[in-house]
Image (cartoon, rainbow, N blue to C red; front, side):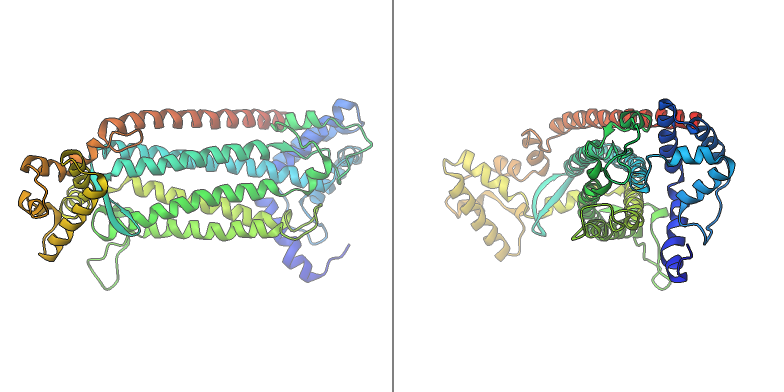
Length: 469
């Protein structure tokens, strides 16, 4: 067939180049498993097809030929030139419908494991930084306003907690991704004998997709991956907001290799790595929408929209996710924390007022409701006088009809005491936090072991296929 020049330029050639750059290893893997299955059933030419696939895999891949539709037919033509019987065996009970979906799943599986590793690396860096900052008091904000003292470790481990759930979401997605479409052929299977369990096992899949129409029609696994990556990216964008806020106030400093200056202002030291990480995650959300919309309001069957046409957005999604994580991770690895500035913010503000209200409720025989009102009135009086909470004295409270000893008031306004009184499970007290860090490290180790087990299993399948082909 002679294709229109516009169709070649817009569709066929870009698709060929994309597949040549990103999909070939999995094309050979899937075809090899298919040929092995036929060889197992005694189909003439199948064993030779396995051997020839081994040879073709080692050869350089040809550039785009306007006379050939895609990479599959390019390989088919080269195989047929060496053995028509082998090419015929390989084409038996095989459609690009099930073949493409197998290739896409194999590619996504590989990318997913890389993404999981990137998340785990960031989690490890967060835990290392948290361990170094267990006693670093910071002011936590709610609604963009100073709220209460906590520790930097408390903040960082909260973020790691969320990322641990992201690791679980990605692992759960892998369970539904790791199913084999091979053997579905066009959509209804084949009258030829096919061992779908064999090809699934050969490719490292858990099992075949149990319905052949589903195997070539569904895009839910792509949508699920886009959703899981988007969820993680949204969380990280929020953390980047905080880091940039801290950097703008001189509370943290990003390492030299991750900042840029100004051609006009000599003092400028812009933490641009954090900005670029945020941009990566913003772009990722756009690609995720492209993945979802490719499946919206299209027929439930084999169709280009959620098939070949969405593979470039999927790849861009994976790349931006990894790159954003990489920038975030190295920024944290070299981050300089100015503990004394964090502490100054905590001690000179009004964030200890909650503890004062708690202290009044414990020591003055009043309810917390009344103590809250008294603390609020005290703070209003101090602000009228241009004073901060740290300057409060027993006399100030006495004017409100409350008598509190000086040592009790001093203890109530001590930020370190505030933190270490928060010994609730999950709180910021240093001993509680150290116990949490141990638990978090054990969880991270489990997740890394889980991922490595999958990686080892898939690599064994790849090595076996490459040895056979």
